[in-house]
Image 1 (cartoon, rainbow, N blue to C red):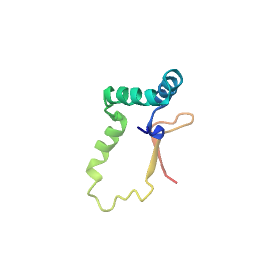
Image 2: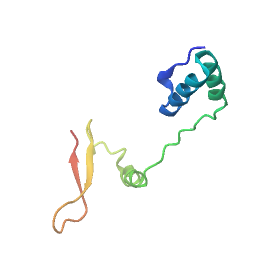
Image 3: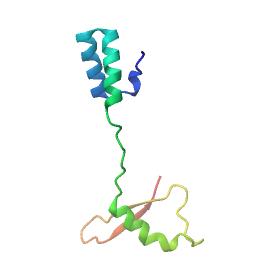
Image 4: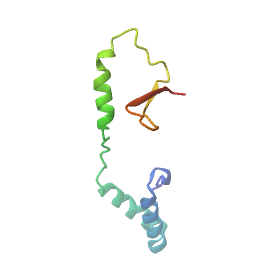
Amino acid sequence: MAINENKLTKGQIRKLNALRKSLGDKIADKAFAQWLKSQPAKAVATKSDPVAEKLVAAMASLSKDKAFNLGRKGYVVKRAKGKGAKGFVAEKAG
């Protein structure tokens, strides 16, 4: 049973190597495959950025406006810097 080590995490590779050192290759590969099947699958949950959601909500009214064009690369919105600076600055990206 060949195990594809490229798809394993760093911790899983360490566990596999430790098993191979202590049990030998054949037994270790069988034991590791069984252990890997018993592990629960991780559900990848993406965290939403609350600031980004507020920006999208604020610009939602402009989504159908043909005169409003962000271009292909878009813009970068930053907090204004400098003495007495208030608000935000939008710069054209790239």
